[in-house]
Length: 270
Image (cartoon, rainbow, N blue to C red; front, side, top):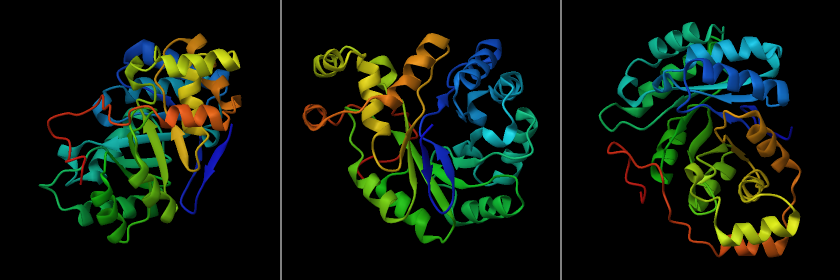
């Protein structure tokens, strides 16, 4: 499993996204992924599945120190990230998580105190690293400017949604960028350009889309999949190498197709 290594974290390039799985389906998916070879599991308090994720980690039989676990504090709870993380750890039945993120920015809650408290949680060993999610370039620069040890930004990113400004900031500051909805919630799988590349390599369109992401410096991807066969297919994308012609075809695709845009989202152009 390729690893992103920065001063703040060591994170597997491919992980399992768990939204919106719950209950037994989620626990089975997590256990299956770990048995297959995944070592990176993503959850959040808002997903209402942390108990199931914790059960899946136990059922997967992989030593805790070999599993990279991310959870997130919901944007309405940013005034008390310490309480949020303590509750998440109880639900997960874990002593710590590897990465603790602000799930969405909240303009009503000052950023610096939230990140300062998260840094304290890191010092206390309740999380190994801290970061943000759904932060625009402006907001990410603000977060970095607080001096907090920001390790990552998790955002929607795929072959039809560009994130070049964020990637530049992340690389300048040794941050990882984690791509959620890396397959566009399934909306990219039938694209003709991806299909042509896939046919050339004898793979599938989703594998091409994932290979394009994880082949980039500092980028990880967390596709959601409950079925072992799809988990294996996603894992196999790590061994696919795209050539210059492939990358040029992907670069020519539209880069403005966003699938996740709730009412509380920030101004993406900022």
